[in-house]
Image 1 (cartoon, rainbow, N blue to C red):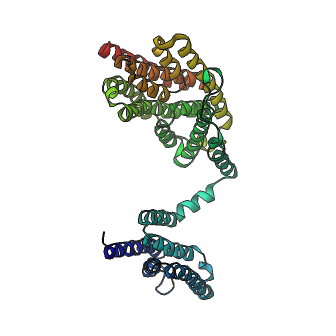
Image 2: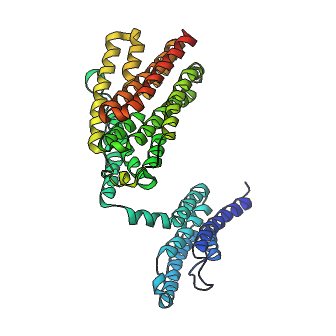
Length: 421
């Protein structure tokens, strides 16, 4: 790009940033009379262009001009607001001046060559400005325990998780503190998301939403959380069973996606068994959905704990035990115990054994054994989730969940045996 073209490009980006933020500000104050607004579309566009122009003057004068321009803009906004406050004291706020100063800075950033960063920041800022009604609604409905639960979740994930070592300890180096705590964070997050989904959308829609998206992360964690919720609120069992089946059914396409990225040659022979298992579980979820009635408001308002931290830590301890047992099977049986290892590892997690088998396929393990191990892990995981749902919640939810999962655990290996063996 020629120097003149680059200059016009950077100035154009600065102007576009000002227009973007100005359009949102102008739309939000579209009902105000002309002359009563502190800043509108044209003002914000000029602010962005001003920030870009002062930066393009070049060092060392450009840096000083940009700083002086930002200071002068702040003084100008303060003066305008002082005058505006006399006639409209009920309309005072600092959102517009902050948005104006940010527009100037982003225009300067775009002119300095960081166009992508400035544009992304402008889009985020515009979304935040336009989300005022939603954010205010959340704040008015947010309870103290919900805020505390959110802060606890941030503590677990942002503060504690990065401090843990990502390496093996204990017997056979099978215990990975980072991975174990990641599962604790995951199940705690599932309970947190599920709580707000049910609260905002109702028990029926909330459980469905949570089930679909939880299947992309950990259907086991979702199964445990919903089973515990069903034990406390048996009237929600049909709804929660639908959410569990959706999460468990989503696990199979997720495994296929992992194979498509990591080992496309393994995906084709694994597609039929994983597809049949998906159809079985999704079919049961669809049947369960059709039999549901409208969820009662009383069931929704009885939710109490946004963060099932005790259950999450208990699940982490259970996972640690399973990891040690799975590693022991591998050590005791050696390379001949790959399928037994897949079954044992699938009890707790399918992604780890899937990636392990893919890696072993590159070092000589046969494709038949790899695909069989992956499907056996999925079947083992499905059986465990069915047993977990029945044990934790009772027969009402257990029968709706365990039977389809057991059928999927039978269909998948059978398809592998017919097509590959």
